[in-house]
Image: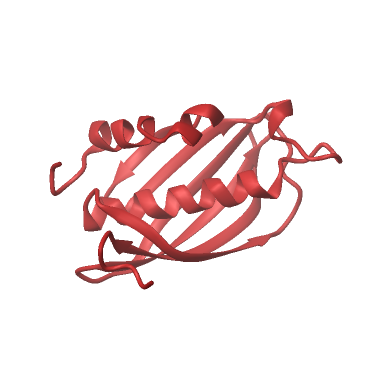
Length: 142
């Protein structure tokens, strides 16, 4: 495995995640301590009130945080922990998670993520914000 990732390598890493494949997640931007993931909003991802399930928003934030950290720390990273605050229900056609590194050391990075739902008119609406710590595998706290 390479010590660094480019967009193509990061997309290969995403494609190796069966859950991400199941959801149809796409990596649309990667590099310079940032990453953007997108997935189409479809009925199977909704909860009983017609909003995107909070677990899907949490997944999107978690994965975007980790990819952003991987752009700085390399490909062998895992989430050490994250928090998510839900701001409004997610509805629309597309879910977008945009993450960036706030600070990185040799083995850990703190990242932030904005999760937006894009409506049929193309307007994104911020639905959730997250912050997390990502560690190089083998350096995560037990």
